[in-house]
Amino acid sequence: FLEAQDLLTISQTTHNVGHAVDPNYGGLNQPLYPIRAGGVITNWQDADRIWNYALAELGASIPLSHHPIIMTEPLHLSPSQRMTMVSHVFEYFSAPAYYTASPALLSTYAANLPIALVIDSGYAGTSTLPVYDHAPIRNHARRHDVAGQAIDDWLQEALTNEVGLELPSNGAWDDVLWLAKTERCRVAKDFEEGVMRWKNMVDDGGEEEIWDLPDGMKVKLDTPLGLRAGEVSFNPSMLGLDVNGLQHDAFNVIMKCAQGLRESLCQNILLAGGNTMFPGFGARLKCELERLFAEGTTINVISPRNRAYSAWVGGSMMSELSTFERMCVVRAEYEEVGHEIANKKFL
Image (cartoon, rainbow, N blue to C red):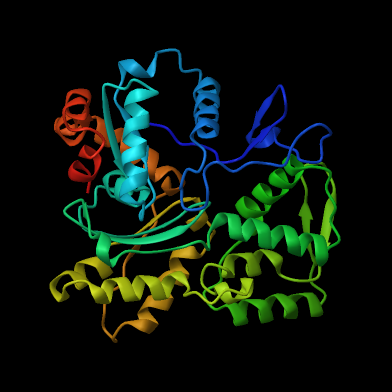
């Protein structure tokens, strides 16, 4: 099961991936992003470099030609991209079998929920997918780009412009943003009330918020930055974007589904992806949906502890199913039908 990072910098002699990328370092070209927002691959050669790097970092010693491959794909991947991917897996990796699904769908296997409304918010995007009997209802799904990367960009700009923080490299910023998001960011049930409570605490002589940075520096804040960062997913207008918050996407997707399915979806709202890990995220979503739905509607938000890795867990569990081989495209099918088999076999 492969999960690729999406940042690559190329010099004349060296390929730098992930944290090794620093565009300020002399001799390096501008960063390249062969896997764009939404998971669309724009440069297959560079994407191969990222996958090979990931495999080397994992210490994979057995050739991929000996194992079936499971990969995730964007929820709204085009048929042509899917066909290119299946060809690449069989021709470049020489895989004996291949399976692909969206991270949201794999998350239902990790949670053992055949019926669910999956809200999967990772680094590049947020998708809302209704699932029935482990089958995605794609025509009702929604997706937008307000996710982890957007929050990273907002946090970095706020720390630079409002706090005056300056850091020497991409890697240093990555460390600070990771620390901020894992230890400082949170979601309030009521944002305005949370901000007012924070201000009252400071005005009453309470301790100002101080962030300890990975390099030992301390940053004093005069604004509830962590609370504001957690609000972005529910209020994308903070980024200047005219898109719905994820609570409105969830409501609209459920209301598009058959009436007989809506109650089950409301009672099985499954969170997935690292961007849903902020403390208070599930409680806020529940409150928002209770406001949107008719009074008396039961809303149940499920927040698995391992949801940052639920796609990986779900893919691992799927690979152990007795039916897994029948779910895959095997090499014989690919050689007989060609890459069109991908759009015929995968949901």
